[in-house]
Length: 167
Image: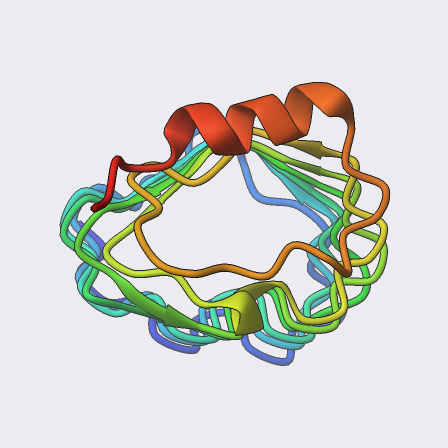
């Protein structure tokens, strides 16, 4: 089984897709896995053992990805530093510290529910076109949504429904 995919397809500009049955279930390191690659779309990505997901799709040409499930990932910095991503499903990384997650993802219009250890407004720098958003599970910090002027009413409801109760 594939146990590390660190930089596995980094710089592979001619890579546009992966087989549907590509298995990441034994992978522990996915850092820079598709960085600067030509990958265009990907279905659900189940990575139950990945600890490091930093820069996974950084500068990648991917525009659509399904759910990302990485329950033990502890770092997820600059995963989508790209202006190609348009649609991403739910992202479940409850142990992950994040930073600049969707930085410069100007074309992002649809994002499912996010589940991270912590949240930062810097995760959404440059995502002004985000319309459909599933919210952020357990959001319990001050967060600035003012640049996200295209969020739908349902997206705002999702954000409020997912926010934690704080005192």
